[in-house]
Amino acid sequence: MPKCFIRITSIPEGEAPEEIRRAWVGLVLPVWTTTDGRDGIIQTGVVSGKAVPPLKGYVVDADEAIRILGKSNRKAKVWWETKALKSGSFTFSEKWCEIVPD
Image 1 (cartoon, helix red, strand yellow):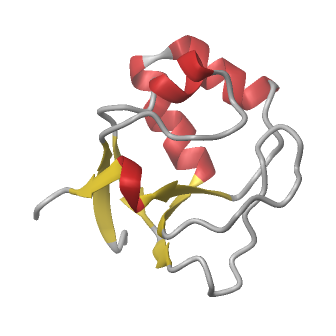
Image 2 (image 1 turned 135 degrees about the vertical axis):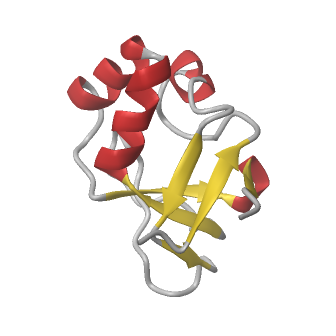
């Protein structure tokens, strides 16, 4: 069961093309856990695989997030499935999200 749900409110930063990142805006995603950026959760670029500065935010299941994304933007879903490095999770900064009230 998800810890909570978030709505993406602004374009996330990252290595994906802007139009692909823009596709997240407005989506509601279930949250696995939160991160304060200092808790040892390793965060890497989705294309390069290089370590990125840790984000304070929300960790979501990558497969579930891509499935939800595909309902509204097939092109973005295909990009994540074919161009991005495989990952078990995505981290969305609290700067790009809001908690969805129960």
